[in-house]
Image 1 (cartoon, helix red, strand yellow):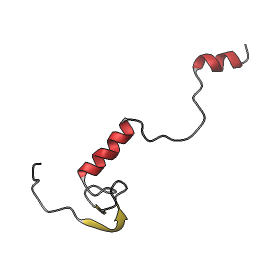
Image 2: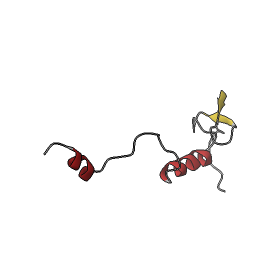
Image 3: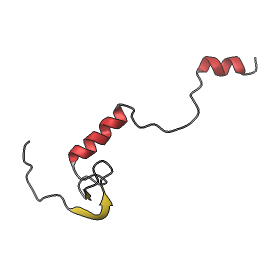
Image 4: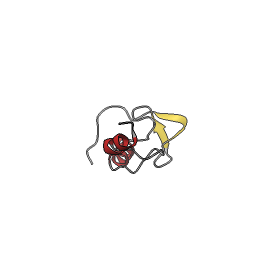
Length: 68
């Protein structure tokens, strides 16, 4: 792993990373590192996170149910 230049990330007090539970940092808030932020992004892209709701209705179904 390549080492980055510059000061180390500043930890935030009382805020934990939602992935691993370590202290979150100002640079990657609400995560502790770029790795945890990337893991979370991958979960969104794989559709591991979903918002509950009614199933989508296709255009054909809504046309069949509507007034003609």
